[in-house]
Length: 313
Image 1 (cartoon, rainbow, N blue to C red):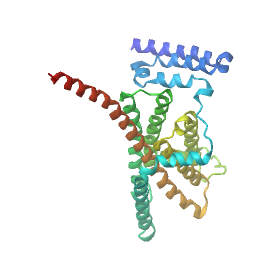
Image 2 (spheres, rainbow, N blue to C red):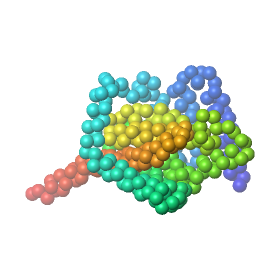
Image 3 (tube, rainbow, N blue to C red):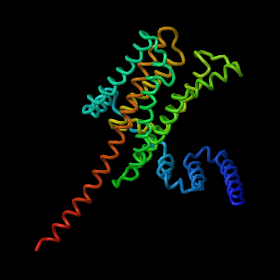
Image 4 (tube, rainbow, N blue to C red):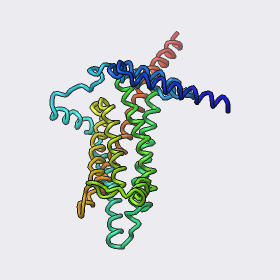
């Protein structure tokens, strides 16, 4: 107990000291120095989490000059769209399958709700909600697995790739959190508490809980802005992630601002967003696993060649 107390006291002291350094004007004016100080502070986190999470690659990337860390500019939007579309050329059927399954489940839920007065089909813990939560959990798990598999691969990695994989790990954790929130109605319950106790007027939104969902969106956009180089990467997974994020942003906007009949568009947008995000994390996981296989092949070829030389007379 005494050791734990000393450790916490030392950690708090370090936080105060390093925090003062980070707020100093010279460090605020020099991003690289501020990141170096933050890096030294995070190294003190117990259980070796700094090394286990490969945070050195993340801090190294963000310490680079802004001109080097910025994503490469494209010649134009049309060539960029063509280039990204080419990466998705082999996944058209899979995309159509994911969207069709979501559309089918949504249609069945809507028919049960409207024709047979089965309110559970579109309510919490109902058919549609449970189906979406399962997809979110699968997408979150795949994002986390992609992060873990990336560091187990033996191939050489660029600094941009090493930093970009943190986006997929963060997306995975976030989607698991959204699944928990969606299934148990955490933000709805918190919004109801705000309505009953604080009586906050939901300016320009439908309910108080919409502020919470919009806050989720703001945090997500900030995260994407930090890792925008990964979004600009010409990969099938990055393209699917961009489209999924756009669909999710439209869904949040419909949830917060739509009135009357327009509120029904939230469900199709949710179907598109969840299916595309699941497909994006699945594709990234496949890309990482494919890189691991390619990295292992040269070693296997060398072993076979050595074995052949050994049996020759």
